[in-house]
Length: 118
Length: 111
Image (cartoon, rainbow over all chains, first blue to last red; front, side):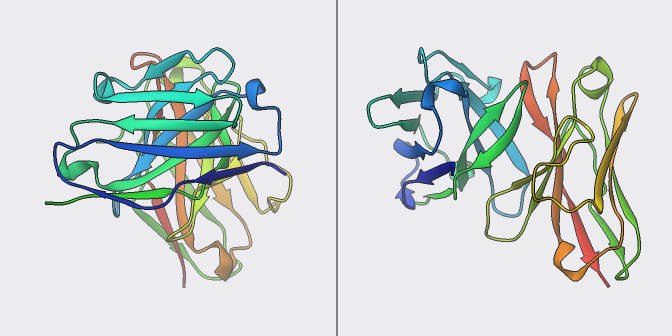
């Protein structure tokens, strides 16, 4: 069965950077675009961007351009999200999700809590 | 401010029918993009509930149904059950942003 397993919780200071991971299994890795989304405490869902596991091409939401990098390692079937210049408002649960067509998200990771605190 | 507008909360007694609206614009739902719905319980990841406006993934009970018209969409829950108490989010694609967009979420309370 499809599984997306994300890395554990992180704590960072403002201005620092963080790299989160998402290991995929149970399907052909290159066949589905992958997405990163986040959810601030008590808030709704926010789409951050997309990566094509096959070629590595990416597209980022406007609010994250210049501060986010999405990469993948096809050998380990792992996706990575790097977020720089962290702010208090980046505190959120970050999810990886598998995208289908244009686009809905049929499988989600369990989420990684990132806390930005001084 | 979400591009898709949902009511913050809806409630109903067990067995009743409730609906959740999702209002967009000519840049997203009205541009012909599909609407999808997710169910989320506190502390857990969202789960796909409805895709392509009206389709249910395998395992989703048929008491959940979706519809779309013009610049809006709706999720209906018939025969409301206690286990349906959760947050529900609509999602579509926005042509101007070139991005997936979500509604702010609706909390369903079973009275």
